[in-house]
Image 1 (spheres, rainbow, N blue to C red):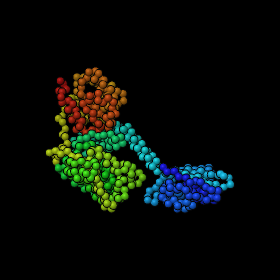
Image 2: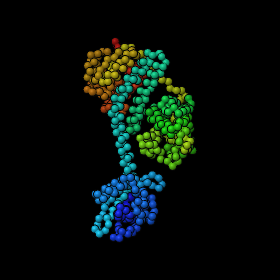
Image 3: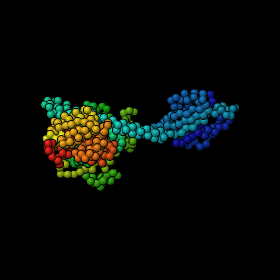
Image 4: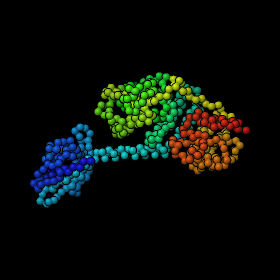
Length: 510
């Protein structure tokens, strides 16, 4: 930053502002180049020369007395302090004070050098924040396997329990439990996606279902003084994208809306089909003509002040209190929208509220108006034997209960070597192997390779509690039927088994 010599004159604990640290013996101060100090303080250079330091309040920082005592004691002092700016905000300076006692016949003087380190401090803060986010990503990746293994039995147990319960209230509680477990799994994937920037799978996303899910979250978890409204017509087109990222974008906007309405208000979610023409597309460099689905999140809150509206998408910029905002919410929303080849618009009036419009390229089809039905369960199995390999006892037990409930016979193994022994013992009966990838002892990839080396041609399905497939070595060479990420839904597991066994005979006695 700009360096400037500010030579205060020390006499009877009184400092005088000097122009460049050069003094005559009589203590007179002769103005010379005073540009950088004047700019740093936001003052006219002529107005600064000759002032006592006590007359420049910008330089009277907290802890000034302690710094002066250290200077008298050690003949030098170094520290940082903020200088408020007349236009708002502040600049941070690094101060270096040196006590000058030469020549001996003159009063002691102080050479003060102030260096503007504002940008340096901002870069350091951003670097530290980025490092913290990297640490969060590493932590999330390390615990994702364990967390997903904890959630997997819940997601498998809930459907089994619902089949045995007739009381509507109990079934509703089980439904809530299942949804919460699924959301826990989504949060883990979302954290990894944000912290590590990993791309998600792009699939057709039913926007109406996405908005209904968000409305339910608002009603169940937001303060009661916030009223949710939803407008999502049935004829909405689909959007091809990452469901978790789209959910995250909506969640970030809804949380901001909640925080903008501390006294309550209306939070409105809406969606509509929009044809963007050349004229409309010209208003945004990221927009292209064509069909879009516009998702709208609006509130009746405090609004965004006009003077900061051009900064709300800057990373780490936040108006929230320390500990209540990271400054990453809106930048993440913008990144998700642009990552889906969409664009974003917003409008806000202080005291009236804010509206965000997210435009995503749409996929038009004749069946777009129909809500995709939840796939039914496949036909029951006919006694096929499945070998389940997993080091988590709770996962093994719940898989056994689930598969036996749907007609399978099940063998259990805690790791690869035990599984190899069971395959050899029940060679004529085992029809499929369902194995975890990360296990102590012989892990999943090692088990698959050992089976292939022995000439076993059984279909093999993989399971992993790690949300990123790249962490599993040699995945492409394993030739798995599929790799399922825990926690998975029971219907997804049953369909995966059914598809893997369908090409061959389904009678285990053959």
